[in-house]
Amino acid sequence: MNMSRIIEDVKNTVNQLLSAAELKTGSILVVGCSSSEILGNKIGTASSEDTGREVFKAIYDIVRPCGIFLAAQCCEHLNRALVIEEACLEKYGYERVSVVPWIHAGGSFASAAYRMFERPAVTEHIKADAGIDIGDTLIGMHLRDVAVPVRIEQKSIGSAHIVCARTRPRLIGGERARYTLVQ
Image (cartoon, rainbow, N blue to C red; front, side, top):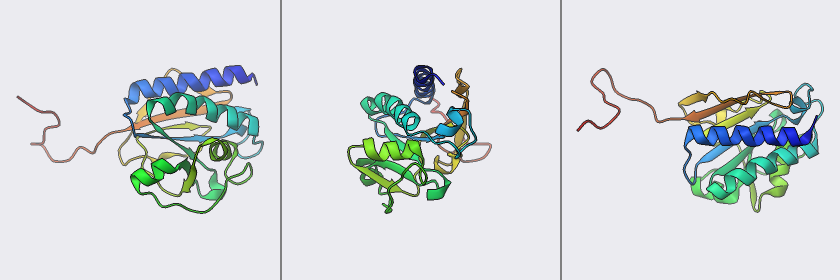
C-alpha cells in the first residue's frame, strides 16, 4: 500500500466529515481504525504500528487546531475503551481507567494516540458528536444517542471500508411539536 495515498484518503475523509458535521470547539470526534483492514488484511490479524501512527497523525493534525477532541477507540481486547486527552476527560467528567494500549491489546491507532497525545487518558465510555469508522471497528457505542450517517465521497482508506456519522439532538414531542423557531 502507498502510505501517501492512505494519508491523502484520511485527510479527505476527515475534511469531508468536518464540513458536513459542523463540529464546534470542544466537540468530540471518535475514530476507530483497523490498520490491518487498511492494508488489505482481516481486522486484528496484521496490525501495523507505522500505519496506525501515520493515520493518527493525519487526523490529529486536522482536528487539534480546530479545538476538536479526538477519541481513539481501542480494539475489542480492551473492550473498545478510548484514548483521549486528559483535558477531554476533565471537561466531560469521564472516568479514567488504568491501561496502556499496545499493538496487540488496543491496536496500533490507539497505541499511537497514547504515545502522541500530550497528556493521554483512557476511559471506557464517551458520547461523541461525530465519528469515523475505518475498517468496520464498530464505533457506534461511543456516539450520542441520535447518530446520523454522513455520506461522503471517500468510500475507503486503503482497503478499509469507512463509515462516517454525526449526531443531532433528539426530536421530542408529538404532532404539535415544532423544531425551528416560527416568527
